[in-house]
Length: 329
Image 1: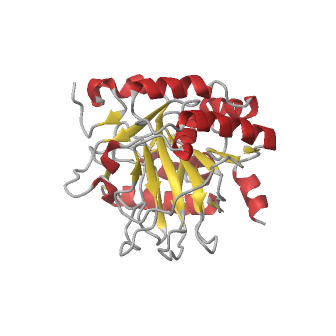
Image 2: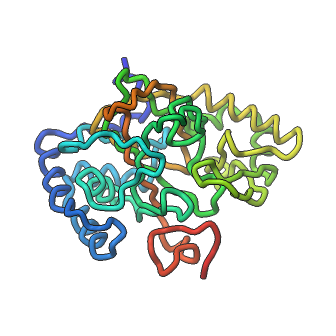
């Protein structure tokens, strides 16, 4: 049943690696997994070169996704090789700074779409994050929790939020209860009234920085929730931290929430599954699960990608891969 739902979700955009493809990817990741700092320019250049040697079916799927993310805004790669894994981390500040096999694999795949970026105020600006349940933080509205995670565009408050995110499953929870929730505006917009669409395209909404950015976050300037093409809009909303200005905006936001709920699909990721999500087209969230905090809990690697790397240059000190909260040059 879950496979049927997954296939429906991505409108045929599922690539299940054959044994020879997985072997080739494992070799590539093994060569890159040398413990070098991921943000090192020399290592990143090696990873760019290596990404060109990915099996054609894998690299081609990622490049086609960059061109058009499809109705659901999601691509699912299955059967990626992970190798032996250490225990699942259990700390809030867990991240990946160095080239382990899974982290190197994720970066090389992301480079087929654009350039990986981190955010200075989140996870120390690291390029690969650990998404793990943390003891005592079950209800935290972010990646450290295990309660349902509200549907959202990643870092919706930021003018240079990710264009694409990647979620690589290293382990799922013991009960396979944790599901990635996906809802595409390309499907939901057809369910909206003309009035709601009109209001959602106006700057009647404010989005605050998420809890993962720590205390002291300031709200962004008023913005539209739908923007860009009238016939194929992009979306910018976080149903935890986006607030409507006025009753008409609140009504339109509620109508949008209902439409997204109607088109939402849940996908349970298995180890070696990578979900690539267009952050301009699709919202994502998570269902509830119960961690055991025994070293074998759910563990994802997360990466953010800018398709147009140049657009954020003024926000990235010294031309690196870390995005500040405000322009620095």
